[in-house]
Structures are given as structure tokens and as C-alpha cells.
Image 1 (cartoon, rainbow, N blue to C red):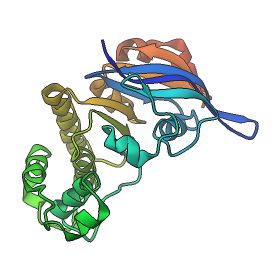
Image 2 (cartoon, one colour):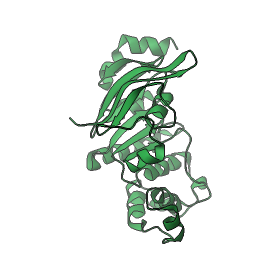
Image 3 (cartoon, helix red, strand yellow):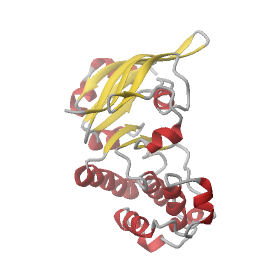
Length: 247
């Protein structure tokens, strides 16, 4: 299998505290990898180090075999890496359609070209595909701020896919989403994986969601990987049970 992402001995220290401590793993093309762990285990810090939003203290990150350690998020984006955040990144005063156009523009041309280009930036066809795929048609012209939280999560994911990334890191996609909308979100992510070979890395606290969505799970505790494997194997691992019960 081809490794899209390789993380080798990655560490991040804050003073004498190791938030991430020598983490090594690979993400393979077409995989949905879940990263779980109790609060404070280093999950978000790990994401930030991979995506250039924090400088690792040691270690290396490779994308398609090429070193990208410390590369800025905007440059990683141009190399096909997308991300969603715990805190929604939608623009509440803009419509769903306008949010998608804006997300797509980030990856097109120069700032001057975007300023004087077409109002839809030539993205109408892509926007309509995203609206239909994520089942946002009934709310396409509504302000994003007026949508339910679950609908905003779907929009956030759609925005991450406007540039057609080959790898997307999802930071707690299930957080605050009601069960019905969560089922729709999981279905859409699985469809993207099946139909477009989209590769995902998912940080999540909702164990049932991550266990049903992901094909492989890594478990972090105190900045280190303590378990790795298929969901059912990880669920039964004594070290994982102890990490959660002891937190």
C-alpha cells in the first residue's frame, strides 16, 4: 500500500512537558484512520504539528514521500491536504453557496486575480456538486449562521473538499452533532472514501462514531501511541481501557 502521510518520531515539548512524545505512524491511500485518546493525550497538538500550525520539537512529516515538516498550512493545502477544526470555520453572514465559493477561491490563482475575477470564481459546477453530495440543496441560499449545528458541520466538510484534497484531517467532526445528522455525516464521509478514494485521519471523542467510521485506530495517552489496530481489537485492549478509566 502507498503511504500518503508518514509521521516519524514526532515530538512537541512545552518546557519540560512532552505533549507529543516520539509518535510514528503512516496513513495509507484510501484509508480512514482514527486517532483517539483521553483528554490531554496530545491529539490536537499532533494534528497541529503535522499541519504546520505548531513547530515540532523533533521528528519528521512526509507527504507522498516528500518532507513537509513545518510547511505552512496554506502551502500544505496546495499540496492536497485539507482540514476541519473543532471550532467551525464557516462564515455565518454568507450563504452556503458563498461559503463554498470562498473556500474554493483560497486555492486558485493570485489575490489580484481573485479580486477582479468572476463573482463565482468559475467554481459554480464544483459548488453545485458539493451542495448535492453533502445534501445541502434545501439550504444552499440560506445564511450559514442560520443553519443547525449539524448542517454547519456538513458545510464545513464540504468546504474542506472544494479543492479536491487527497488527504483530509478531521478534528472532532462529531462534536455537538445530533444522532440523526451524525449518521448523515458518517454516510457522506464513507461515500467520499468509497467513491473518490479520499483518505482521512479523524480525531474524535465519540467512540461509537469513530469505531463505525474508521478502518484502523491509533490510541494516544500522555503523548505516546499505546495501541493500534482494527476498531474491535482496540476496544478490547487492556491498555486502552485503563487509559480511559484512569483519566
